[in-house]
Image (cartoon, rainbow, N blue to C red; front, side, top):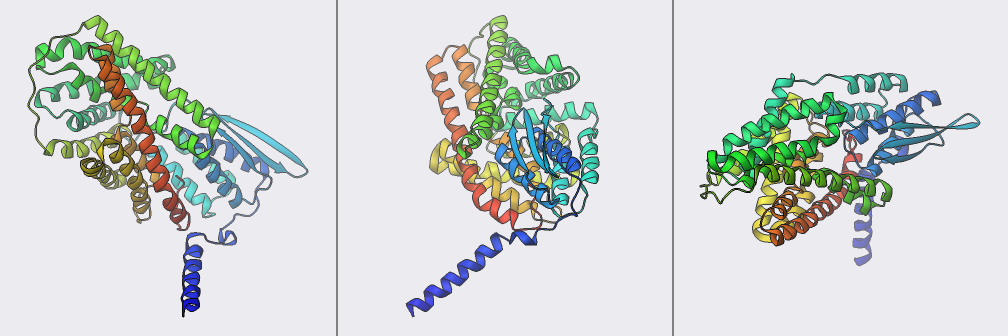
Length: 439
């Protein structure tokens, strides 16, 4: 009886393994394509996925899938945040090509179109030349919304973060105004590479000066309570978290360079805050503001999602799914925080968000995982506590600021560890279904 039970368990385990790991021979393929066209597609596709914020090891895995779809041989990749090298066998010789990574990140509508393209390639619906032409259209596509609406979206997004982090009535007008100002600066940076380089410092200086000059006398609000939500969108939280994931998965060069980039961006924000505070001067202690109530953070999640929808050109069909993922992320973080503390809550949110994003992707109208997963990263705000620590170091409470800054680094590690745990099952299940789209 024991042996029979063991055999049944073994057969059941084998059946599950077959479902989660479909045989490689079942993957559809396109008729063999010219190596030059496949090489050009692979390098441009890799660069686009890096612009979308994907981790280096996942970009390599996706490119390997694409190469298999086109029956390419002798293909290997070297993926960095600044460039992608591709090697492919062409007849009796080998060719190597390189694609630099543009500085500008992709909008979410472009991310959606990019991973739908990857999905169609994996299902052998496009030749290499057709895929290259479609990729070109994705990268050159105009934003779904006009510039003024994207500025309004940044304002709405800042208001949502304010409702999450500091839900007081006196601060709400400042969030709206400073968010609109950040939207204008973002548009300026898109049109001027020189401004894009110093955008974190410039935005932090202007926002800090305005907050420390007018927050206390005009609004009766603490300046730091206004500065932090206003600058959250410029924080390198996602970059630091992806860097931690890459380092943990063995992508040493990519993870190290991304980590240095994130720390450098945080230093620019620090200098900007210090400059703005030095010009404005430290104000007195304002009277305490009365919080709006327990409903405000939940409303902030929805307002933040609407702001992301407008500011980053989310396709309208994806908005309900985006709000669903954001709500789940905040619910898990808030609920786990009651039991596990802030670090445990960050870990739990990282574990849950990725499987939820995969589950939504499998729905007929579900968007690709990156479109919902990236805004959830922003909502978890892994760098917000660090910005508060930086601001307190500049102010009067240096000891508390250093503690907050170190706790923020632990928060980044907690979220990254949670994502690593959640990605294990999610990746296997996602690749075993027809709707898998990459992340």
